[in-house]
View (cartoon, rainbow, N blue to C red):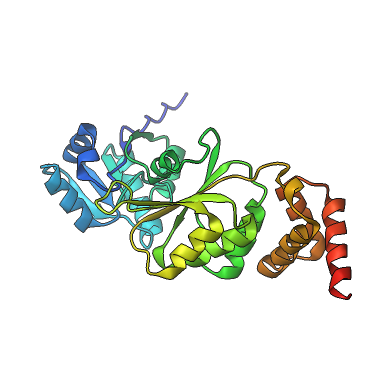
Length: 293
């Protein structure tokens, strides 16, 4: 006798994008989802209540906290609600859930359990910064937050030195100057970039320039607010305009910042500037010989 098929879960997981700055950017659908949800899982209950007040929304369901520290423990609880048929809406402090914010674990668990997942599209710091940066937008990659410690950050940036696409990063204000300085070392001080601060808010600021100049600007004083950094990709063949001494200096800087062996540093610089490894190697040898003269 064939056993009856297990019915698919009837719950729905909704990832709802929230404004990154101005409450007026919230969509009517966001308000409707917050009002009708059985459960609202939010990164910060205080911020959610402020947003609900701004939208004149009275939630019909319960509100639970869902942030980095309790995400692993709370995901099974929310999954049980979904499997039982609940409509669960996930929101974060700003932007789209699961993009450098809580949400991914629950999405993966819901998909694995056969629960339907949908989204309320909303503002995105990644796309907003990219659009206003003035840098190429036809191809880009999102790198999120860099490692907090200098060694890990330099190693990660060294891996991205030859990336041809425009890159988008999130960064904390107190680490901005150090990160920009490490980017200037890894990518070159003249690599174009934009620091986007407090996007869509009253004190929005977009600072454009070479990484070296931006690092100096960030080091002059305290930079506050939510920060997104957009960096232009590597230009193939850019090394043709570099002298042998400049090529060698790039290799030495990569060795010091990334803790690489010389062979690895030469390979990375060659890939970044679009030159044969032999040409970069010869530049390093020449620089060493000149230092002993």
